[in-house]
Amino acid sequence: MRTMRTGGLGRRDILTAAAAIPLLALDAAPAVAAAARGADSSPVLADFERRVRATMAAESIPGMTAGFARGATQWVRGYGYADLENKVPATAISAYRYASVQKPMTAVAVLQLVERGKIDLDADIREYLPYFPNKGHRITPRQLLGHIGGIPDYASEADEHLTEHKTTREAIALFADRALIAEPGTRFKYTSYGYNLLGAAIETVSGKAYGDYMREHIWGPAGMASTRMEDPAALIPNRVRGYRFVDGQVRNSQFVDVSSRFAAGASRGTVPDLLRFGTALSEGRLIGPASMTLMRTPMRTRDGKIAGFPRTDGYAMGWSVLGQGKDSLLFHDGGQPETRTMLIVDPQARLTVASAQNYERDIHPPLAFALYAAATARRSRSNRPEPGRSRRRRRIGRRRIRLERPRRSGQRRSARSSRTPRPSRSRSNVRSVAPST
Image (cartoon, rainbow, N blue to C red; front, side, top):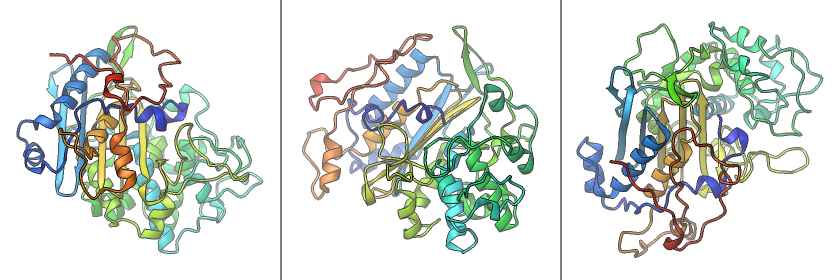
């Protein structure tokens, strides 16, 4: 998870994604449903698609897939190339590395096992992993779910660029002897290693390999038939190739075996499968209401402060949160060699948005939130509000979000530009993008 780890996007910035585009009225269901069946894009999505093409051209993005699901409606579109060298198009079923959007899936698995009485959120993690060294403090699954367990993150770039396969025990050994960065419960520190501890606990109490448990209890029930653990040697249908930007040019990604982050971000799948996960979660098919409440309740450190990234409403169990209670919005991004991903779930609206790109540049959240802004529109093109919407929905529907102009390839974002001020509600203050052809 790249963007959120640096605090680059929060309530002000993430919603600066794109509400300047004409908003999509989902009550115009026939047009959207036609797009979902593979027909040409509905006119109400044309502006979003023009922005995607403009951003991809400006940022040299080889390929991406984006989509949303709400009720019976699912719209997914591929752009650019899954394989740039051989000009293989990216499609709705292109298979990307998920990276850290896998963390919410691991969190759901843990909560399932809590519901079955196999994991105690407040037990010492060493009850499930006796081989993990005693750190002199109790480290609990609850703390690990919210990144307040004191577990360190990657110490160097070398930690993130391993090329050999790691078993669960070997993955834990990579950080087992490192000191805690803080006393558990006192500091928020995003860490993939903490989620590896949770994955190891899943294996211990279930008696199954992490990937097997996920297939049987998360991916299978959600209908995620294309999702699997990453395997560089396997033949994976529709696998995309990954790219990076080096010295002003697009290059192939370096080979990295991601098995060392097995429960934190070592799976591969499609955008439609991410949408199915969000839908299954919102519909209560994976965990019960009490667990769902825990999943969207931000963590607090021992001093009572909300834990999480700047300019969000906190980090809960596997998600960053915007808003409070049942109206909260859940989101997570992912970043590792070959990929950048984004997953947004609005449980109250039963809406999920997902995107994936085969490019190692942290420019993906604005496009995902552009699609979210369109899908959550509460006004038609006539600007008449839809009846029967809650106060919260009307308020979000009125937000006007600054649309960043795509930068030329190699152009750096200034520190100031990454902290966009809250925009005016006036459309005249919204910057537009000249679409590419």
